[in-house]
Image 1 (tube, rainbow, N blue to C red):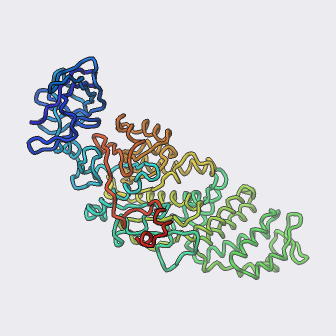
Image 2: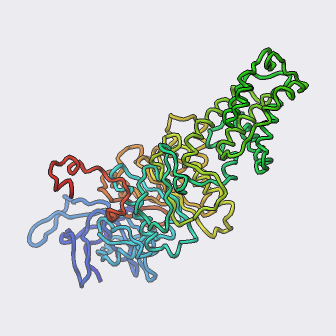
Image 3: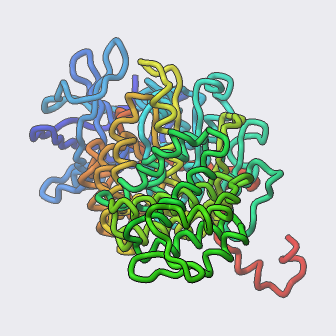
Length: 597
């Protein structure tokens, strides 16, 4: 039995009107040892219809001033509420969805806390809890298997508790389910602001933290100061095009020729030195020399730190499209080249070069070769050449290229706090492609393991509003992430994105998310996106979003049968992300006790 609070007096499609008894306005009631919440907005009522209880959510309340009733010796107005059916209880328990509708004069009853908990806990793990329902104050478990088997969006303005929710969600997962997921799943966090480099999320022996920095030279003895890329991944057209923003029509085919040369001869000892000597010989013996060839050869000599060749090239001039050296014209027959030039050129040595230096060298040599063959125009490739040289000075500080296997732990955190903006823009896309391609190429069908990519502050790289980069590059960047979020699920790769400005993120990406944790959002564009993208969000929950308090969020999506408003538990101070606001009262205090405390 329960507490009867009124009856149905009108049914307009799926909109119900109930006449409510006066005494039901109390906030909390106790009956036969059970706790009940009174009738108010977003509370739940049960309407008895035959052998079933139809569950409704209260959406509005008003007084009918045209009708009055006597209550405890005084005349009162009739109280009415508007409600909407959300499901029903029968012998098998709660079922979500509108299948049965009440009729006029069907009685309405309050639902006990246990009944309400059974609605939301039905398909959930009762132990997997990150907080309590805001209004009912009931700790409800989340269906963690269905939740993490999907793409997740966590949105909220600065200070709304978004970072705490992200950290709490994965902290509970690693604390409670680590024995179940270790060896079967990997989690990678792209951390732009260095919020997860401490004790957050998981114990140190279960995670690897890469502290990348373009501000200082890396500690070569520390394997976590640079992110490891395999040789095959580095010498890959997609990677090169991504790192150096190659244009598709001219620069990308040029890079393809560079990589093809490495694939044919890269592992052969001395092949790069032989390539350099051959390219120089072809240039000196060309019938018509391009003006840029001499400058490129001088660059190669400096890169190889070969003073003999550098001195020789300083005496070479270009006259009438032919090389001139010490009063001698170098003819295409090669005789004078062999006599005057070859002895110095044969001293070129490429030993001791790392992969970055080899790339710069191969790019310059390929351009020399292509100019001699008439394949390219120098002005089309020169911008790529400059990008390669300028980018590698930063990239060699944050990337290492080798085939040495790395320690793959449950959690990998890649902190880019100390990286410059150019690297912050490129690296996340490289990492996403790195994990997606390696996982897709090796996973079974159906997937026997999963990869979970977590992108905090996702608007930094997934925005389609940025005007600081070319449209071609922006489209390429978004296409890569859109492919992962559209196709990744079938390969067992899932993305979690957290952002202050969901409206700045590509609509294609947002539309592919399955589950949402929505904190306070006040911008109209953000609210419009939420309203038009999330089909599982009801109007009442949507209207709450601009006024949510810190740590409070609307939870909805395919893993949840009904939207919930929950207050996420705050993590202990040592487990919180390093994103707290500065305490100016403490910082500016002249009281030593306050500063120390």
